[in-house]
Length: 357
Ligand SMILES: [Zn+2]
Image (cartoon, rainbow, N blue to C red; front, side):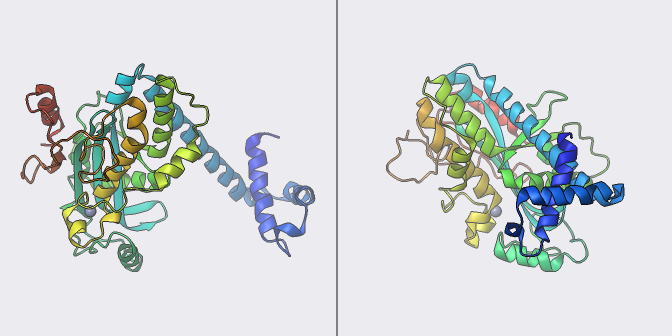
């Protein structure tokens, strides 16, 4: 029996056991499989279909996950030495949403930042999103979700930018991607489906005549943390055999910078709800990377870039300027950490390159 068929059958066994009088413990697994086997052979294709489909979907998700892990490994393996590894840049992304109906999510807030181990956070962009309206019947769920998390006012009172041009604006924020190459953005494991769905929603709502040629890949930031930690140990000759995804993910999920003040958007700072702010999320995820890996590569932590501008005294830090927005032009709401040395032209050029028009 092939794996796929067996998985479909095992889904049926699971379902059958969940309905078994006395519960799962009331029958041995071998006996359950034998009984289910007899029932399964008499079932029609239509009756088997939900179990087989479930197995196929799970197998597709698994394949996609393996491909993503291999791609992240390849990206990191491309860094042949410690300096390459330090300079590699990553896009980090977070969304808040108003409501979801299964696979559809209505976005409420978006934030992204550029990060490298060497420079920390080099640019941040965030915006509240006004989706115009909610799908009929979503108001109750949206109100409850907002109350429990981000506390953003619901449409038609939603704050922020109308959606029509946002998708193109987000995509054009990453001009360095070669023609045909996808933009890779990282977000936590459990948020990947939501982030993909929010982008899909924005893409659907994008103005028709906007030509968008770049595609987006949403990857697992927790796997990135694991792979980078392992690579940092490998490159510096430390034994990395005991580093595992479970351990590094547990570290990530501790979210040790969750209550950092002054890193959220204006709205969330004002209502004192910073923990759920998308802008705060992307920044503190970067801080976790710095906190977890920079020491292995002898990178000095710069406050406001690698770690919060105001931080605990036990860090080894390089004094630098606190983070400030570069300008108040409304059409360009990326924020950049000012370069430590303004005479460094390449830093300034990098800022120009990232500017959204
Ligand atoms: Zn916010």
